[in-house]
Length: 430
Ligand SMILES: Cc1cc2nc3c(=O)[nH]c(=O)nc-3n(C[C@H](O)[C@H](O)[C@H](O)COP(=O)(O)OP(=O)(O)OC[C@H]3O[C@@H](n4cnc5c(N)ncnc54)[C@H](O)[C@@H]3O)c2cc1C
Picture 1 (cartoon, rainbow, N blue to C red):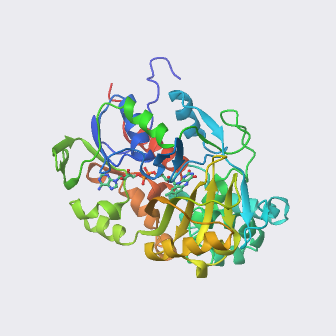
Picture 2 (picture 1 turned 135 degrees about the vertical axis):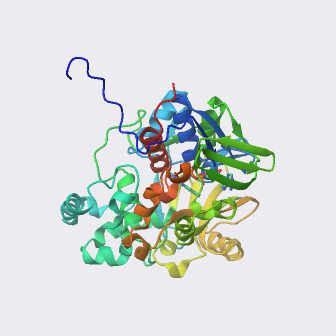
Picture 3 (picture 1 turned 90 degrees about the vertical axis):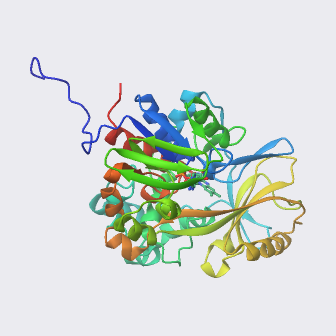
């Protein structure tokens, strides 16, 4: 550096000098960006419509045990999440092992990971280096056009059948859709990368493999929220007005004004109350999501002590409605979390059948939760640049977008993208 020269400031995008923000949504992405902004000296108000924070990482207590209804498994790729966990002194533990269960529940096998030893892996690596080298970095837009094709067609075109065999069961069991659906390859490849199995990342927080939060993942987000100055739960947003100087969010408990608006909810969900532009309306109309369900129930008689993927029900979309996976977490407890796709009435009826077929008995259902899981765009929209258009909206009308739609539906993906967005667009206010 020449004498007298100022240190370089980060390359802040846009010209706005925001000092305050209202964040809509208190899931991981909303809380992560709120924390980042507050630490940079901004005044932040978080508005959440539910009575509690954590969004799709909600956990509940049954008989003295914490059960995660949604997100809770972290892999060695979860560096930002691990940093947050360490900063807050939250305790972690390794997660249950994974097993693939046959239809009768009699055989539980390890996942076949042939891809990692197959000659397809070097071909995948060469393709990745050539066509989507940034896939493991926060966000999706950088890789969207290269991976816009429907996943089945993309796997066939590149001779990656063993990649489907190794990652498809877990991908489908986790809510991202069936490989014979028309979901773009982008989401499958991002998922595979985020499992950490394609890289040799070091241990995180002392765990050789996947880990989670002791006492339920919701506890982490409650800790984040507790440190923030202004988090309001049980608030309904009724209208959003944006103007050149800032934003005004009208709620059922009064208006909140700020320089900037951060939408930590998918665009299609907030559209009804947003003073939306044509571009926002058009993009919102293209957002899709998966109907995915968690059922927390006592079901004795089933195989225990693992996260079980039900091989037959993950193989094809024809099995839609059947249970795709279940988790037995606590020894000595009959409670399990079951996961299914489809219409709620069908899910409840089929779950009873599926449990019986596996040799168990569905007793008390403690809770059911339906999710609009994995906000995403279809293949044609990705090829036409839908994610680039969403990125181009960042900062327009003092509005920013974080969460699963721009980042991918995983804790680490949403946290890393939200933190980077704050660092890129919001210069420190102090
Ligand atoms: C069953 C299931 C299992 C999962 N398993 C894993 C896993 O093991 N590992 C992993 O990494 N990820 C997992 N995920 C994904 C992970 O939970 C999500 O990617 C993550 O929670 C997304 O964070 P978010 O903040 O973008 O959105 P959300 O968590 O959905 O939070 C959005 C928040 O906005 C609120 N909101 C919505 N509309 C409004 C409104 N109009 N006004 C005010 N507030 C509003 C919602 O109530 C919610 O609190 C799982 C998800 C589910 C559902």
